[in-house]
Picture 1 (cartoon, one colour):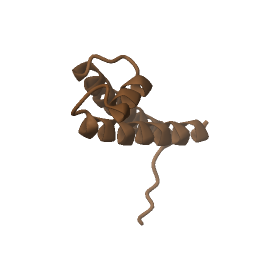
Picture 2: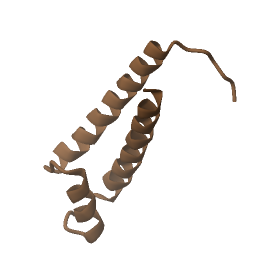
Picture 3: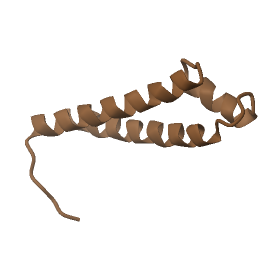
Picture 4: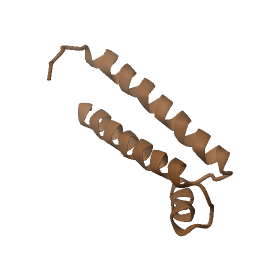
Length: 78
């Protein structure tokens, strides 16, 4: 893996941009299924309350995991 030096402010801006894109994708999936809560959407997708949501539920899980990972990195910068 290559290491690159980046100013902290630029790195934070890049993190914020990536977080915004991820949040937009999460909101798009929630809007598609008329949900406001990630947790409720994932619960209903898993228990079959909403049918044919498996693909979006997998995407949602991956997006939430990535978002959490990025928030952790951002928190550690402070």
